[in-house]
Image (cartoon, rainbow, N blue to C red; front, side, top):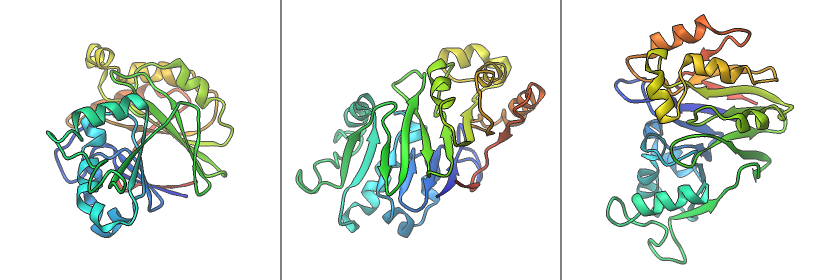
Length: 255
């Protein structure tokens, strides 16, 4: 299994700043941020499943464009996996005929371009032997992280989250954990903002990583443009035993 990082920034502002989206092999997306826009039309056609962590725009903005661009060229609907709460948000606020057409009834209710499929924390979805399991997260809207398990190894993505003991309880049960991608959106000077928005800053991240009981390569995502160097310097100054590195666009993991 290959996981390619299409976007991992907390914002936009340059050729290497794309918001969150990961491509698993050729047919599965984790989130649909602006990084999806760099895929070719042929690559978009191959995507059958999109797993959404939460409804914030930097994680879902390309979802509307994917289905609009390739829906009429596919012989099956795009399946969007999300919690029921997130599905309701997407349907109410995006696919509502006001912001975007409701592709769950287009071109017809019996043959739509888009299908929503509810997920539940802790319940794995098996797609051709690739297991994707929603994990607990703590954010300002309903949210999950994901365990991506090839059978040989697992990559965990926290999604957007503040402190979340339940996340670590789930991660510590993963025997084949190899990679942990975790957010750190703000530098320490913006800790009040991090706490209010349920994100992490470096000192909070260190408290969270202290709960990790398994060995894994730690990679940092969702860094805010203009504060990347400061935030990473603060992370590296308090690394302890974990030695986190910054996640990079177009980085590829094989598990």
